[in-house]
Amino acid sequence: MSTICKLEPEVRRRRGMRAAFLRTPCGIQSARIMATLCRAHRASHLTGDEKHKIFEFGAQVINKLNFK
Image (cartoon, rainbow, N blue to C red; front, side, top):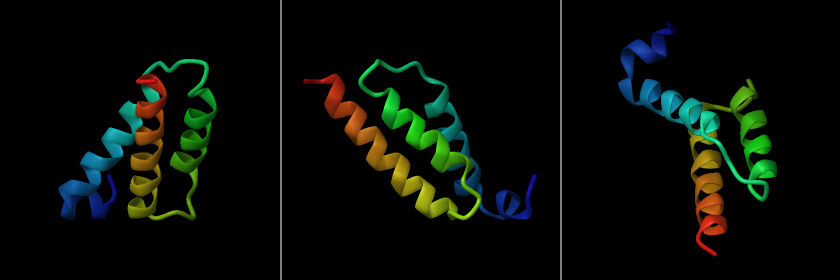
């Protein structure tokens, strides 16, 4: 476990939420969005805050798709 996770529990919680979100099954329409989020999850050049913002936006888009 990295030092940042030991010092800031919020970072650990966000990482866990992103990983859990990627494990959830999705419909055909949201498969492209999930693929993009998977690439963002693996991107080492993005900070945790940037990844969190991307995932929040992706979750909102998927939520809108599911309620149409």
